Image 1 (tube, helix red, strand yellow):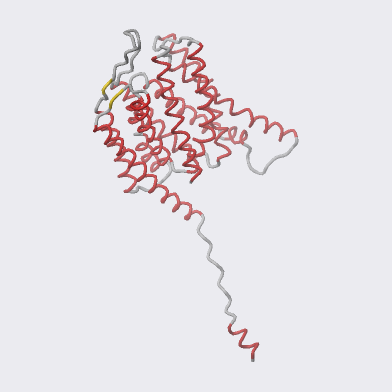
Image 2: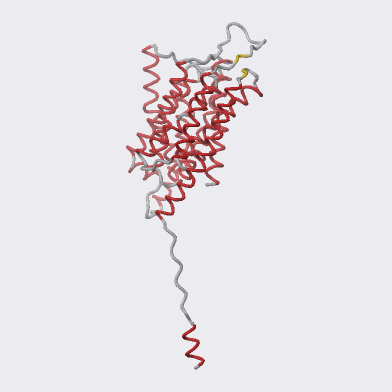
Length: 349
């Protein structure tokens, strides 16, 4: 559980940094080909397959087979499950990055936190989890915090160095709809990943396979966006390209080593409610570090509700996880101690 929470913390920090990197690319470098940018980032996941392929070929040449499946063999055997997970992950990432064009980071992460509610529903439908009142109350608290945070628009603080040609990200209903759509995909992905990927040594190769799936599906998607006029594809300047590439490499390794283990060691609801912590962190960066926006008191109340919900749901779901583990592996009764009093009495006589 401790490893799971440490991995979850690393994912929260990386996701917030990645969101601000994306919006910096949009505003500072005026590059807004979000679909191409997302597909490019996800293709880097295929780098994670290299050590698994080398290990698989080395073991095969030495005829050193294990009794269970190797990571590469696991993907080949469960190729349709991995393909389904990859399509959901690609859809979630494309819609999420596109939503960053139409909503500020603080508001966007708040609305995206509704993924915990969808994960709670999907965990009951897909994983067969029981309905727990405490978790339901915590999820409702998350939704309440999301609503309070998103309804009241933050005050934009003008930047004296900006010009009229600069692109400004303004909160809109379009951005919120996209963020909620991404939240549905994240909630579904978390439960299916928990159901199908049981061991942490398979998590990395599954995320690596997402790179190949993005290459096979994402590239045609980019071409469709280009030729239908849905979104023009452009080549970024070298500064934006360097920033995008650095973020892509960091993202693929964090998702491999941290996010996959968080899903395995924790329940899906705990992971997605924990990712709600991106909201207060994003608003802190937005207000204190960047100084771009000022949030109202009701926004702060909504943030506090989200943080409280993280603690409540995390505590309740960990209790439920322990109950499930005890049900699968009940503690063995201690062997009864032999009564030696009669033996000693006979020996004395």
